[in-house]
Amino acid sequence: MLRRKFLKNSSMGTAGVFSAPLMASCQENSEENSETEIVKPIVVCTWNFHNATAKAWEVLNAGGNALDAIEQGVMIEEADVENQTVGMGGRPDRDGNVTLDACIMDKDSNCGAVLCMQNIAHPISVARKVMEDTPHVMLAGKGAERFAYEKGFKNENLLTEQSKQEWLEWKKTSKYETIINIENHDTIGMLAIDKNGDIAGGCTTSGMGYKYAGRVGDSPIIGAGLFVDNEIGGATATGVGEEVVRTVGSFLIVELMRQGKTPQEACEVGVKRIMEKNKGRKDFQIGFLAINKKGETGGYCVHPGFTYRVYSEEGHVNNTSDSYIKV
Ligand code: SD4
Image 1 (cartoon, protein in one colour):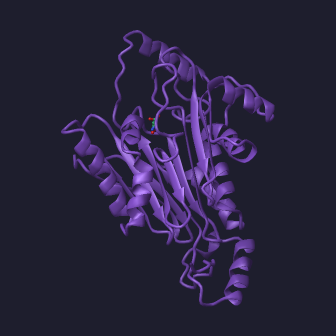
Image 2: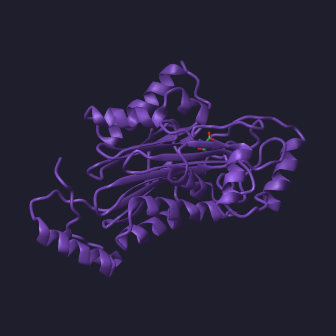
Image 3: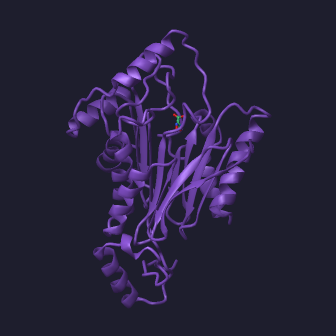
């Protein structure tokens, strides 16, 4: 396989967003080998997470690797108490406990995940520690939490007053149902390509609001909520995790790209597969996001409303995804 290099794109219209280190590395690489393919750093994420993608881009633009960009990017959302589906401030389960899920995957197919972990604000970083410092891929519940303390993470109360009050209100009826694009609109799945053309991804969530205690969705499951194959590309998902797990959605999308589909085509096939399995049921949202080795991106969802952010040298945009159901 050709060794991919990052080369300066002379038609770059947004030179202002480039910092000196990356420009310097472009020039070095361009002198080293002028015949290699052009690789442009890029980061994409589910939904309209401007600050998270800006942070990830800052890392990539300074010459950092995709894995660091992912971790630092999604940490922005984990720390944002306004985001009630990720990290601190996430909606609790039906017993009032905030339980977090996250996973991360690197260019060498190393991966780590934490499931149903309480009291730790940055599950993505714990997932990375699982990947790097243990022989395991997944740690769950109390074991994950204890491991986090061993690694120096601190115990924090993740239930904000707003999430608590909303939960108390919900308890009056305790009606459990998914609300399309409302309950499920904030999980962040992120994919990045760095200057070496290497891909990494991460996904982090507090899962479905008011879920049964112990419930885990797709987000921390490698192959379901996230999958990266550095030779092909990566995919991530948001929405009703049960549906994504049933089709091993992100793995499916990467395999479809391996067979020659574009990221857009692959996401469309993934959503159609889910809809066919559901035989007419439509009361849920799924959004898939994918990127291939060339940096092409695609997104597709069940219902209108899913958007995804893209940040590259061409700019910083929020794309509205096309949907299986049109209205
Ligand atoms: C889950 N997929 O736990 C997650 C929920 C989600 O935006 O994506 N929310 O099923």
